[in-house]
Length: 295
Image 1: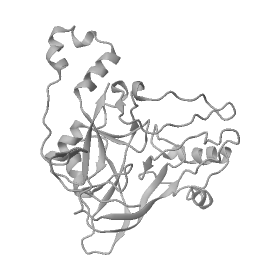
Image 2 (image 1 turned 90 degrees about the vertical axis):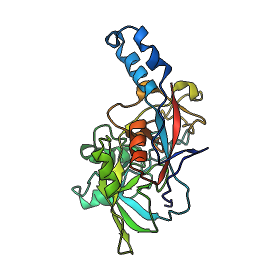
Image 3 (image 1 turned 120 degrees about the vertical axis):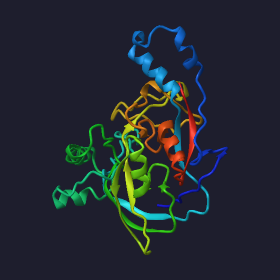
Image 4 (image 1 turned 120 degrees about the horizontal axis):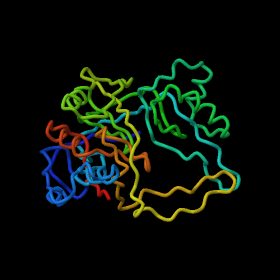
């Protein structure tokens, strides 16, 4: 795996770098709420939609600034394997995910099962289901237990210089221990950090925490292509790439966490403005934020 941290700064065409506080713009709806019925008269769906229209959301990305040379040659301890393809449609009926659960400990399983869960090699669907059920009682509620989901601490080696927030690739996030603690102390929600088992050849090795995220949120239907009918044999549907541009469905976005993995595209990490404001106020570097449209 490869990737760098990044530097702080202002804005650029790719998004907002970690740095000075974001400028708030009052939503037109916030001005006209006085003319509407009392909030208690709104349906839950409408109320949720209005709240999210006032909250901004951002996609996280690695800051490409060259000053950060950090690289992690590491992987998680266990993984759910792939599933053999359907002989009719040549698709994987169970799809796949980039979800990571570093705080899930599978060391209590038998050595034989642990060995099998250390390989991502495709297996028959019946064997995949068996392995999935071994993991399910130990995984958090709502875990995305699909082929490719990883578990346990990040193990391997690291070198170079890292920022406060580290995106080794677009679907993973680590933080220096002190950065995580500072964000948590400001009240940022949804940050569960697991100590890594990464070795550094330096006296001042960073203490990295691998961030475990919940999976939430959907694309707005208006940005999605028409999908082909499912395979009559296995039920699989051919997947689509991330729409460009894409919009988030405001009614599907969580209100109890400030950072999450997108359910419709597990390679995307999404933050709300609470987290972005905290990162910029604390002057934490290493990532950029691209503002997203919600509908």
